[in-house]
Image (tube, rainbow, N blue to C red):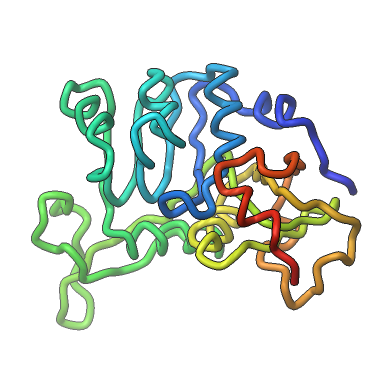
Length: 231
């Protein structure tokens, strides 16, 4: 089944109040065009799950600065003074997790599990006593899996069936999030017919992708590099 949609129709599937995972580590792998369309359409009361908050006026920071986000689940926001100001003003709830823990919470959801045990940050302020348990003579924290209603991902290459390939560091959170969301919306610069990506080079299989947006060349912030990917 072909999954191509216009960017307007794809993002219109996201309602206000939704929980949305957004791929990317800084700029690489961040679906800037999908984010910009979400800014344009104006859905509000969103919960975002992303490794970082990008930079002021850029990426998901635009959504936060526009007042569309009620909560951000992330690993750090230290590169974005504007988002820090919004958080400190009480206008944004921010939930922090160590980076590896966030990735594993997402991966665990994608694998169909409910959680895992960790010995990281047992004595930190983000650990509640009720999250701890003793097992085989040691204390662990119970980390619950983290899923979402939607995931937005950026791929360098796709076919019309929804198979995706990422470029270099852009792979980061994208394949994990594509497995952990109910509806996955992918943007890609280079979209071809089925078979254009050799099976061994597919990073996210079509079964995980719900909607696919083909971007004109160089329209996304990461498009200059992504457009030149060939496997």
